[in-house]
Image (cartoon, rainbow, N blue to C red; front, side, top):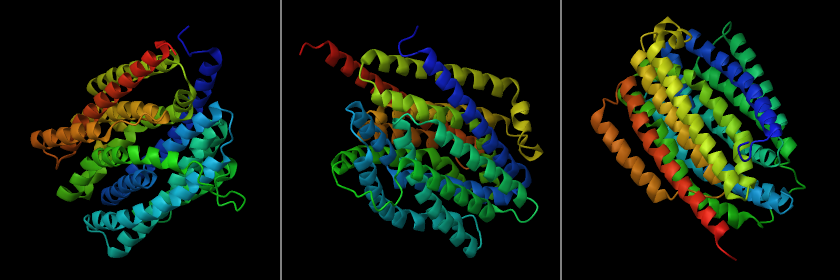
Length: 424
């Protein structure tokens, strides 16, 4: 039997993956309603808003949820409680969130205004993005606490329920009024509900009995200071394709990027399973053999996945595009580049998250230098005003990022192996 693989872990992985498959299927159906029934211009507005929301999430988190998992894993290994850590993380997040949103929201409004929306809609979307961001990041902190404790079932049930409610709300909105603002309002309501439920279970809400002691503040800040530059780079590089099209193209081209992105739901399943099971396991383990087995299994999985998805996108693209509707059926070449870029992005993200869960944060100089060179190379070779060019640029940057994450994590594992064999 492969090191670290036990019948219990296989059953747990199967249960988590099955539930996550249901969650993502419901989310996919909700997204499909938007793709099929929302006018392309409105869907372009929604796509850009969701891209900016994802960016704001990362810039407001800056690795704090990963820092909670890394510190929590070490505390649990010593049998220490997590209450002080949770309170310190919540207090630190309030400061980070205020600074980040003050910087982000004007840029978000400027980007949205670039698609020629009415000013009242720009203001509404900007406000909703700010509220949803706060809910998402606090939810991420609560999730880190629950997952490092090994409490996987409850967060999944919450996610399943929230996604069902959002699907029902989207379906009802089709018969009333359905545009980008209404859709984002429903997303914001779902984020608030998810935060309320997770915070109560993890005890990270605004409970007056929980006071920040500052005992873990230094460790959290140290983790943030090392991870924040990488987080900023990764989110900006992953969204640059959408932003370039929004500036150089129009809402319809942005809608095509968003529609194809719906086909990448499989990577959400993989990411959720990894965050729920693999990262906490990686954070708690002490021995090189267990960590190396996880590292090798993750790379083998993504290599096979890339081969399968590329094969399907080349041989039967019409089958994959059919679900998006006739207005997006001609995006065959774009589909192939979506598969390549999304797979490498998920691959690199998974490896980076594994390292971050143990406090192995990739040096910012390595990340940004390699990434900037990749972006410059991509922009010089492709037409970034087209959907295909945007995904080609994403493929180049995602490939470079995945290679750098692979190399850095491999070096850290080899260093740990040398420490284990070195006599005391």
